[in-house]
Amino acid sequence: MLPELAKHSEKLSYFYSIVTEGSLQATSRKLGISASGLSYTLKELEKVCGVALLKRSKKGIAPTEAGETLYQLCRKIYRDMEQAQRQMTDADHEDINRIRIGTFPSIAIYFWPMLLKELGKGTKLSMSITTGRSKEILEKLIKQEVDVAITVECFTHAQLLKHELYSDTFGFYVSSKKGSAPLDEQVIYFIPDAEDQDGKKLRQYVHGLEVRFKEECEMDSFEVIAQFVRNGYGVGILPNKVAGTLGKSIKRVSQKNVPQNFGPHRFYLSYRNDLDLSQRSLDQILNAAKKAVGGMR
Image (cartoon, rainbow, N blue to C red; front, side, top):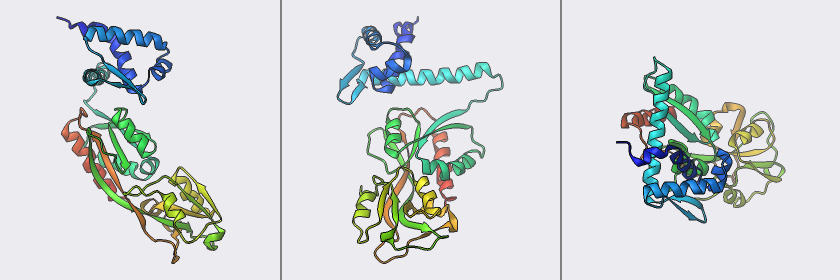
């Protein structure tokens, strides 16, 4: 006998979108349906289920306990349907686990190619990548917009499991090709809100120095900073592993009042404890990530 809930599949898709977006208005814009129409559909679905599915707060819309159960059911159904659709349209289709990985640009550029190389050795995993700041990626992980996150640090959350991949420190760098002017005659490039493992920001490190730079330029990308430094536009604060990828084109600032290695920070691979992926596949991703770390010099 067909369950009553199964007769309302369209309502389920709207509910799923609302929870994923965390906003009725955002879902309305995305689907091209009025907010009032979505609200009515949600009320009808709650009548069918006999319980409240969503709760509202200052942060937006979140599922109730019953709503979270339904959301997880929808997530599994839609993934199974996606897999079935691929199998129906491709007779030679193999069962491949598709993983959505979220990370930040430095990892995407320097670490990702090595990760792909390691995962390509006999695994049946297909991956997509989303980039952004670590905080944004971890928020996407909580909202299940990505399956696995590779980020700097990791905030505590009851549903997250995390594995430390490696640690790094920051350093001050200049171009190797141009003569080094005194630091107080140079511009410094840095990401002000980048943090160490204790939550101390790079802004605090810079302002705590005895030396004062000609000008401070606040950036949002280590890759842009690396290119500015390499071309001799000033001093840059870079993670030492990122700096190492530039070879001899840049060099570390060697001056008494400037620290050589500072701001220790750690990198983690994280995923939700309810991720519907086999332990074997999770182990493959984790092992490949650890091996890829060995390729970063």
